[in-house]
Length: 154
Image (cartoon, rainbow, N blue to C red; front, side, top):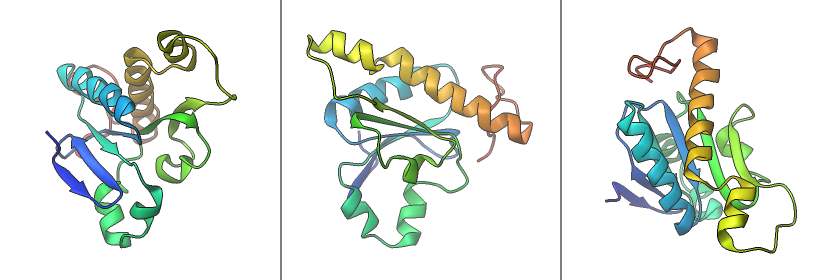
């Protein structure tokens, strides 16, 4: 179902205009982000999932291309990373949300690890909604379907 496959990044789901972008770099997290996208969509919230397995390949592309993937007019951004969150602010912006590990990890069954670090559907969905609300409050916009703030027409 991928809409676009290009060097360093793949747009997994979503159409424009969108209100929130969710970025990840691993297949397991891609599935989590796609499930979050589907839930947001079912609630009338426009979103997009961008898989970014290679920062290096993505950064080697033209600025025009990079701006067409990570839209500059969309400020509500969430990155999901199973490793360190270091560096993701370059793509989410300083006001974006980066869900990831802030410690050296945890030795436990995967379900426990995912819950501990917030790699769960509800956590990603809440982060996206919080981003939309945060950026909409700066613009005074309202999301028409959910009753929450959002960047309409972005």
